[in-house]
Length: 209
Image 1 (cartoon, rainbow, N blue to C red):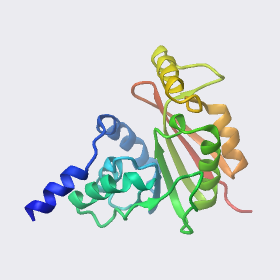
Image 2: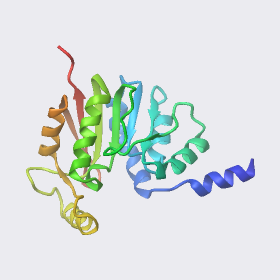
Image 3: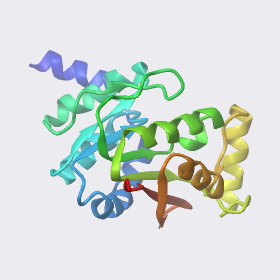
């Protein structure tokens, strides 16, 4: 109905960054998630990534999640896409909400660590360790530091901007994230170089003995 379409368009939020990074991310996750079937996305934001990746990777069922204020936009993108493989969003604040009881063989998150506080980052890795099945894959996209140093001047400026806005945020060190991952049963697999000084880090859940 025309009225409904106008309402959907009004609720849809748009991120230019999502359109810019979706194809480089897709080129990696199409391989990393090749043997997966159920993906939990943490911090789905506008909902753009969820519908785009689900359309391009039809073997996956994509479960978006975010705080409640993001759900209207996610559902608007879902309604417009009309994809059965994109589930209704789950309410998930990593510091406050219960993690889903469902187990997933893949978890994806983009541009979340640097806008979270460190306790929230710790909570996210803890939750990922709980919801991933043995052998499952965790793909994390964003800017990262190595050995305490920036990979570019633009990342240094971006980090200063983040901290000026929220002192608890900032670009995280890969080594700290990898130690944290290990504490929650995750083993490092790959570090993919991405455009604009970003990376896509991949861990897998250790197999049970």
